[in-house]
Length: 637
Image (cartoon, rainbow, N blue to C red; front, side, top):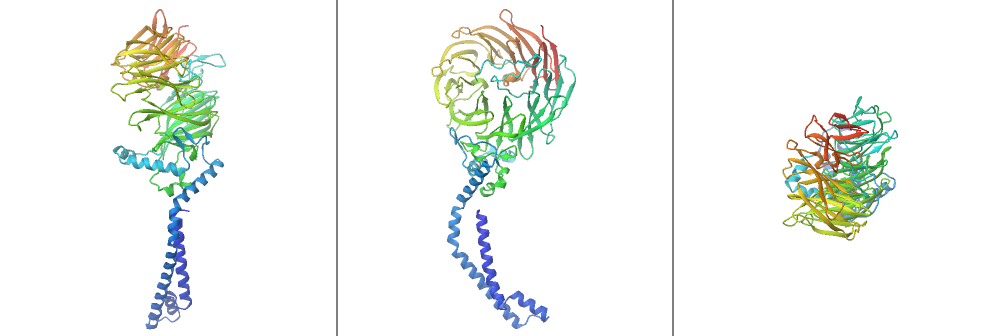
């Protein structure tokens, strides 16, 4: 029952009382309308004095009846007040009961996994979600930035150096794969290969090029079954004769749509189905056949009042959905007043329209790190009047997500590899700017996100630019005017310790374990970033790292180098002895201890300073693919 229902009921009672009183008068022959009608029908006469007298009496009787009705309604006044005071409670309980019943009947998306995610609490009902969003909307409207938002439509590891970038097909063809953060956890990208074809995102479509004979052959252009022409292709996966295309859809609201295709015949993809969720695409991961998709969503109540918004038929107008079902209220985790968050869904690539699980973390969106069995959502938090990094852990198995704990560390994570899980512990390398100079630290967290080890006061005055966790060591680069490589021993998680450091010119943006005793660094040779620098560090003695080789490349004409912020743009394959990246042209190097870095190939690209180029190989054929073009050359045997 709503307030409107209550007052409609009282109005009905009022009308009924008046009507009954009127009927009593009319039965005595004093109805004004009946009198006039009868006299005009039967006598055809004009109104006379007697008629006026009767009409006046009828009006008095009608008024008395109305007064009687008002008196009756007034008697009900105290009951109205009592019911009015309880109406919000009744609405909330009703919404909760409906939600619980529907959740049991699988009407909503998501599996309840816990009452908390650290200091995030699962919403007790949709009313709680509405209140938090409404409060955040009111707060943001008070700022100039809020006015801008209102004008826009905002609906809406056990790790080694990295993947070996290598895979073998059934025909024993060796080919490269995407450079990923966690071995065994695949990541979507703009260029993929299965050793027989190159699949490339190209202006809203996918180009599929036959490379089975080495040199690029026939190309097939394939456009997904978009809902509107303005939809975009973001990234894709290729595995086991399946192609998963991830797109952004903008209509009445922002959605991430994943199209799953059977590519037994790559020239004729066949749609298996599609998965969709509210929010703009952030990132995704794929383990076996299970895909986890993360999107950034903004919840708008569209100025609906609470009563209207909580009606079951209106939930879909503001509550984020996955595959057409609103996310169950107990799968929303709320820890702060915000209308933005991260939607997470999981599905089987063979059954994309069947949601395994869904969650929405109201965390202002942020970054994601995924190990082989847990995901960590982290973002900057200024609630303590200083910058913190808030990290939340969600474990998963076969698509089912189980919420864990949340914690915070001082500072921010300047590198995607500055967070890593191995051996059941999470390692975090933040940089803090709360004082007069930046300072760094290393935190070790157990499975419950409790700190069990820490190193404070690392390289005051410098910031971490690159990191790599490998076995019992962590290697990281800080930057100011020199390029110190630090080595820390993390073999005892409760007592991590710095072992050594080395200062050289420039700084590295990316680190990669080349072999058991060498670390590759890719970055810049000076603060002006006019030269790209390849560095090889010898860490055979962790207490005394040594720079054994370096290579400088002129980058004065290259003002945008994707490898700086996207590790997937780097090919680093020690077994194949290949190091590749784009810097205006595409550069491919090999390395040996005697000759250092040797340039194997420099390919001029049509679109300079453009992201999206990838270097991939199949046996001894090498391809630079991206932005609608493929360059091909042979590697020396």
